[in-house]
Length: 502
Image 1 (cartoon, helix red, strand yellow):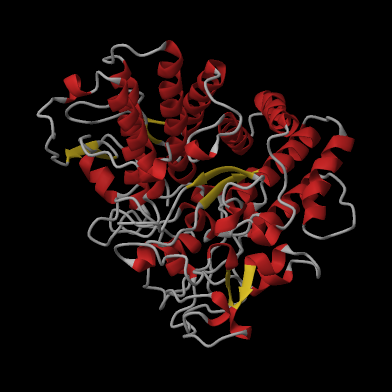
Image 2 (cartoon, rainbow, N blue to C red):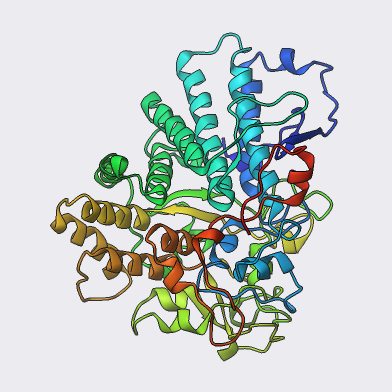
């Protein structure tokens, strides 16, 4: 079943905001209580679908615009924040300059992530109440919940580090122990290793199940957090998982990079995991942003007052213009350049807003007609799936891990140059860490990878420095690795949360 089109009507939604909780009252259509309702497999499936829903929320929920990929990239060196001025999405501008404040920080992602954790824990709890379910299906549902829980904690771990962590949902007074970032990592990796040992997923899903967790998605998540933690003891295992994906033959690089981010490119040969957004009968609205539907990301990052339809594009709000230096880093003939950096200034008129460069992120641009089938608010319902993991990253992970483990340089070169040559470049690149990170930079602009790559390779402090325009005036330092915990969470925790440095 496609996750996008299932609406769970019964489940009481418990939104966890850090250490505090509140119920949204939902009347049961059957007058059943939770502990009697979740005793059938059909209802367990509803709970599983509910566990996926917070994946869709960060772009607009909890009264904040916080698309995960953009929140990462504004702290890197490829895009500006833009908008009307420095007060427009003020928390974004503060993040870009490494001066976030507890009252001006992306607290919506905090709430979205803990909502996802809560729903995943629900699935595992409800499975204990369910009668007449096969061991195979029980493992499948539990494995999805565990994998998604790690995915949500990964958001929290990267942005905040030292966070409240729990494996079972909280009871009154809803206070969880805050643990160190290293301890969060240990818990996440243990859960992922449990999932992998359960062997409950196919390497790749069929079209009817696009959007569900797969073995390849879990492997990619494992490699991501192991490499970010710089856990050398698990590099060989992560490498074996990358090679298992490669050797499976179920994924390959799309021959044309320019088509990857079109609707026709969704779930293509190189797609390992995507968060599904669709405009077909989409009912997401300003009044109900958690309803199923499309995404607001193209509205956020497309030119303001653009003449709709010009060059096949529609208008947006002018956030996140691509830097001139990002366009300039591509070699002539690299097909990724124009597929990444749309030169809007060269083809049309629009309102040049703050930090405008003329370039916008083509990967998620508002394309004419991509929201025409929605039924609610057009700006919220673009059909662009959010690409989370692509096969190109599998290849580059494998190349990097081979170098770091003194493995086959022949294989590392092969993997690196498959990505390099797919971009239309004919030279061969030597498999060094610097070259691999450079290739990742070229490949993944706007996909939320660059900032974390700079941190894990110890390049952030030398790269993320004041710019010539006076937009970024601070230099990144290790003390800025974690955002301040939202003040509302500090207040609600009754003295049990220790604030991060900021």
